[in-house]
Image 1: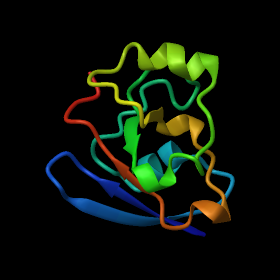
Image 2 (image 1 turned 90 degrees about the horizontal axis):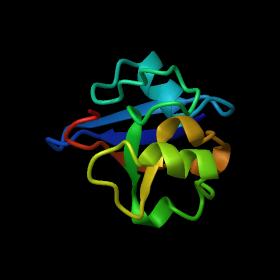
Image 3 (image 1 turned 180 degrees about the horizontal axis):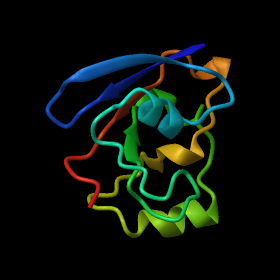
Image 4 (image 1 turned 90 degrees about the vertical axis):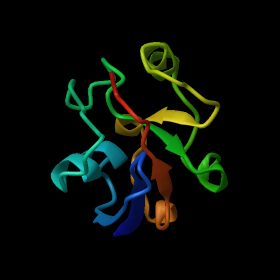
Amino acid sequence: MAKITYIAFDGTETVIDVKPGLTVMEGAVKNNVRGIDADCGGACACATCHVFVDEAWTAKTGDKSAMEESMLDFAENVQPNSRLSCQIKVTEELDGLVVRLPESQH
């Protein structure tokens, strides 16, 4: 399992053990993390699972695909560390990952 910390816009932290092979979005949805809407169910067809990856983890979460970059155009307040959580596959190496949630997904 990989411990992932989801930090809501208001600073509330939720720490969840997520099984490798799932995505960061799936870990959030399965554990009712508020702030991850995941309207498309993880198909990279919306931007409602937008997160900000903690700077210490950006290299470990991999590169954004062209599709992910395109979908991020629909998100608000996109930053260099913005990712769609449906595109971050959980591995043992991501144990300790920290992601911050935007104020709104719409």
